[in-house]
Image: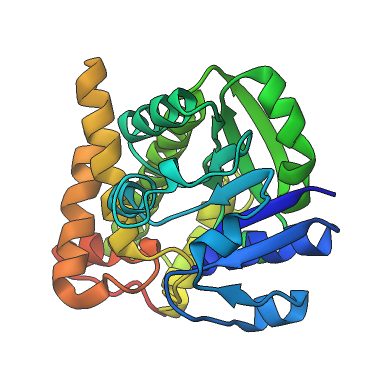
Length: 295
């Protein structure tokens, strides 16, 4: 059993904290404001707004926040996490952020004598609540080995990517593929509709051909049903697309897909779809062609 302080009870944090508790770990959940959810209630987790109380005696401190500014605020800003950790605590950041932000965190924590892992996750609400996330981790292998039982409690698979920063980098590589698939699917369905093909028949091909993917399977059906129920908001996908672009620019690596994806994501947000699922970016592609993908 590990004593864990889990900070931030958003959609992802609630699911992960609950699964760590279910796995038998001693979890203290913290949030900036009072909060409860059915997921937390089912796990028997109450949420404190007292950060000092949450951190007391913690062996591992974990958090998965929505963006770089939230991480900065927690670590360096209003909450000054870097100055209030118990001696010897390991810090695990599961957020999707710029690798440069992760590097800054690591340097600050290590300067205070703490070990740090960047461990962003692939997956959304369902995977977080069902312990089905896919985790990519950067940091010292010895620290990874210590934390692996916690990762196993919240994930389907765990992938050690190498030294610090490699997990954050892999997350952006993966998100580039997600954006590319959504964009390609939107273009393909739109072209098929313009060509007079029945989208149900098109979906039948997408389900079995050698280019099939879970995204094409699920989002294709959702688009035909006009269903963009949020699992991961389009607003957050815009943030990720910008992170990918900035990271690639620093490395001098071309990512033309990211630039095009940003265009359609922004157009869909401008049309009022920002709080819908990330797949709503394809609505902007269909709109440009003057078609409705819903059947």
